[in-house]
Amino acid sequence: MKSLLSRLAFVQIGVVVLAVVAAGVGVRQLAYLVIIHGDMMTTDKLPGFLRQTGYWLAGTTVVTSVAAGVLAWLLARQIIRPLLRIQEVAAAVAAGDYSRRLGESARDELGRLARAIDQMTESLSRVEQLRRDLVQNVAHELRTPLTSAQGLLCAMRDGLLPADERNLEQVAEEVARLTRLVEAIHSLSVSDAVPRGGLVRAPLDLSRTVGEVLAGMMPLFEARALAVTADLPPAGPVVLANRDALVQVLVNLLDNAGKYAPEGEWVRVVVDGSGTVAIGNGGPGIQPADLPHIFERFYRADKSRSRETGGAGIGLAIVQNLVDAQEGRVWAESRPGETWLRVRLPLPAAPGC
Image 1 (cartoon, rainbow, N blue to C red):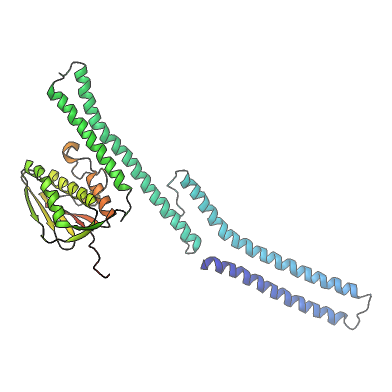
Image 2: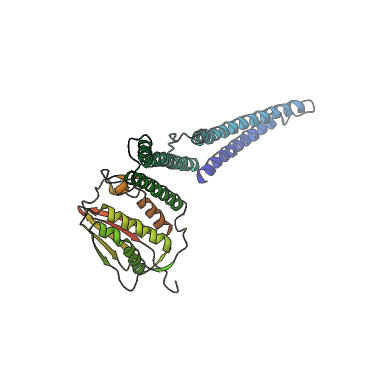
């Protein structure tokens, strides 16, 4: 409020100065009139003296009031003009036009308010674009298995294909793909609704949890002839985590490694004392241009892979949401020949802290 108060103080000082000047002029004029009329002051001259004095006081008051009004108008114009612009842009944003910007560079309160509104509008614009992309991607992902299943069913209905076990199995596979996709989208929406640190957490043995999940994922790795190694310290570490969310994170990361590692390559799981689990796999690696985007929903770094083998690009977005909900951190590292995804979870506070 310093800038606004300084403006008001400026007006107040101006009015005070004008009042002092007017008072000084009035006093001098009054003294002048007294000197002129003093020795000759009679009853018949008193009305004229009072009239001239009144004229001077009225004139001084008018000049002071006009000057104060001009100063107040200038101040009001400085304040109201940006407020009107802010109101106009806010109304446009409320109507769905996120392209409007105030572009205010002033450092006073109104300038900071204008920049905050610009930042809010930019955020809303990004959210709206994400919403549109999400709707478009969901529609595309749902249409693919639906179109395939519908085509098979219509062909069997019209007698173009026999309704045998093989064709019915293909329809069942498309329906299963559709079911998995809907479940993934539901999981994503649920994880989106959980704020950072919003999950109930408790001390958890990270090595033991990783080992249990890894054992359940071994059939996936064996089916692709992947060489799996694990470095899991037998005594911890203990992290502060939500078990269900952590299991979902590990399943998604291990599933990602199993799908994207070429057949016959390797998968390695490492847990260290800092509360970090790293899951790596061999392969060509992720291009540097793709690496910053792999946690975005529906983003697939390998565009050549089909939705059936590569997934819809939702798993890592769920991972990031669930890790954030546990106040952890997830990141990726990649170079030719290997890719690593790492999750670090907070450690319990030391006793007495």
